[in-house]
Image 1 (cartoon, helix red, strand yellow):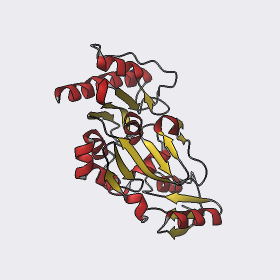
Image 2 (cartoon, one colour):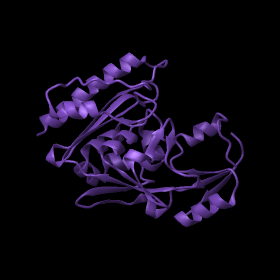
Image 3 (spheres, rainbow, N blue to C red):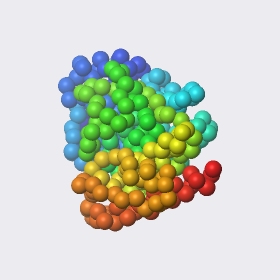
Amino acid sequence: MNTFQFHSTKTIQLAKDAFSANENAKFLSGGMTLLPSMKHGLIQPNHLIDLSKIPELQVLEESNEFLTIGAATKHDTVATHPLVQSAISGLAYLASQIGDPQVRMRGTIGGSLANNDPAADYPAAALALKAHIVTDRRVIAADEFFTGFYSTALEEGEVITQIKLSKPIKSAYVKFKQAASGYALAGVFIALYANQEVRVAVTGVASGVFRWEEAERAFLGSEMKPDLQRDDVISDLHAPSAYRINIAQVLFKKAAQQIKNNS
């Protein structure tokens, strides 16, 4: 790992000032991807700007329509907080399945969304829950936020501050874990809203998270094994593409049954 200067900041403005004043700087949230990348020499920032102590990034509150979670909120807090468990139980369960206890105590929801790993869990929740990603500059709908492989709509120096998640009537998340990492070999999040609106989002299967519209139609019908056809389905040492597609179909059925059994 290269040498670097560490900047502990207490406000978003101070963090932005430090980023602008220092060349080759990176924001640090939980560091679950950033620090391993530095250890392996994949990136070599000269300055790390810590966001974890900024109060604005740790809010957790509920309104009639939304659950708002600060970007620096730890996975463990999302998993165990009574507000999350009562408002969006599927999200609390998702957070409880991320990595291991050490990762859940350090990793943050904002850091995961900003990194947009194709096998990460939170992007599926954000897409299914009609999230609005609030930054220091604007609000980005989840449908426009995830733009590709490890890619988002965030601009250079832009900081996620909060995530506003629409509260569904019911939600469920089911994933099949990679044995070594705990990342999703496939993961399916279903959110059911009023007036029979349903959103199904899939992670771990393709080059990025995506809505599975065939599954949304299947949920409202009788076919529980919807078709899944994409050009970017992953085939790697963990699983071939056909296996991932089959697993996604199985997981969708399990998640759908969870929601319907709780009616």
